[in-house]
Image (cartoon, rainbow, N blue to C red; front, side):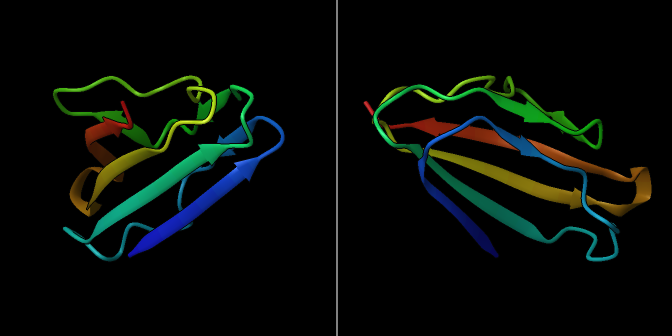
Length: 85
């Protein structure tokens, strides 16, 4: 599954999912601003595994966020952040 947020013109909030029923499902977020860095806030249902949640975009650069649903712990495990050089 993928969600694409591009040409962001304001800060964004990545809210908690409504349910964690698809245990183990993977999700990719693709985020890019409109040339100006934007703040990113994360719901408490997101946690990191060997990475750090980004709090801002990098102006004009593409970012991918890899996530696995963890229904047993009602969390979305963020396992990778890839940032365009």
